[in-house]
Length: 340
Image (cartoon, rainbow, N blue to C red; front, side):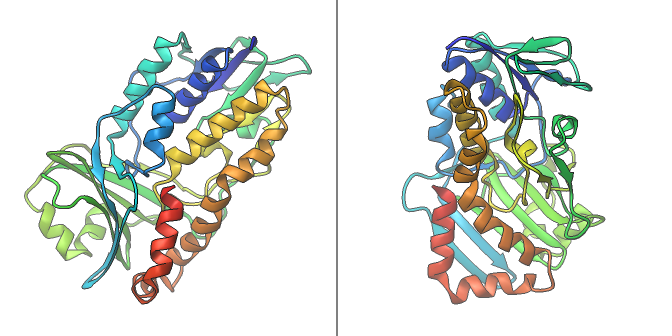
């Protein structure tokens, strides 16, 4: 396959899209304003389907096996251990570095620039002084490209939630992804090394990380006295709406394609699937088929995450863990659907 794909955004999904393009025979250029390995506030748990998807691209990040998911609400606990392969706790910098190396190995070109204007016609698209046949935009939650091509519908005014993350020099005490629910939000505990644990908070705007941690005494006691391994990093608001995923020769993937809430740890797996089907649509010469493919590969994620995100941001949030305990078969089924 000949042709040139311009990728907007050099995060993990932008790199994956560029790798997919090269494996399909396209030339690929990434436009990214940030230098080096890029970090991000995220839970850093790759669900079981993500490591095989990365391996297909030739990427095998180092991480800590995670055997399941546990919801905790004070004394109430509900646990499901994955039936098959484990999830993987991986530092975002490790994941990004491995993808970056693989892209370079395949001859992906990277240009340090910011896309501020975009022009396209029937034959191609041009941005940052580069002309290409197609553009795949993976430039994040607040995608500039989505706005430039008229697909951005922004974040809704209600139920806006934000993320904060900090790592600690601390040996993991669990082989699970723990989710601690409190009135101030949810804290995700993800082991990422033999001597490191990441804590990620999902909460409404204005909630301080330390206050949310103190609202979970069991967890606060575990990290008391531990040395922070990273500074506090934030992101959001998470919910972002798009009018579609295709505008002419521009296709949106990853967070740029629209986002519900960072509740399930599915961001990387879904983004990898989107990158794969986006490039497949270009190989087929039918970019508009990507919209249908996007809906197919994100359907279960959207169906499971949207109701849970609405509950998490509502007065009914305290009922989530009791409901999971009362109907463990539904909890198990939901976790397995997310995992695979």
